[in-house]
Length: 152
Image: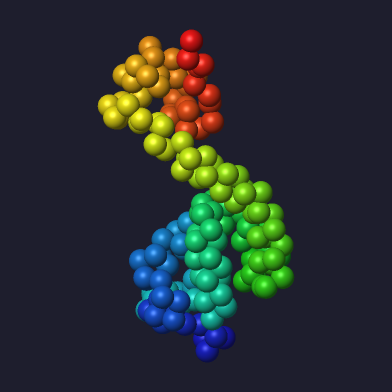
């Protein structure tokens, strides 16, 4: 079985991911390793595909928790196959569509969010008089989708 295992340095070189990131992925439960007699981390060759899966999922904006959930959902902790990717990615589509909508709204409202030039929504007499947005909760309320009151 030792011939199917590769050391962390080789996994890093072949995957293009730093060894420190691979150790982090392992700490986060995304990868598993075995130890050699001398204590070196050894990974299954299939972990090359697993790392590629993790990187692709990160590239579309998924969190490590979401990636972990996806990997845990696979039978016997196996490395994701093409069929797995199709199923998982279709489940992520609504999440990505919502992110796209949020980013589009942010882009379209960006100039108006600091339109007065003061760079302070809490003090902006034009866009947030009396800091009424603060009553709606934390964060940039208008960028999160709340509507400013109508000018009277």
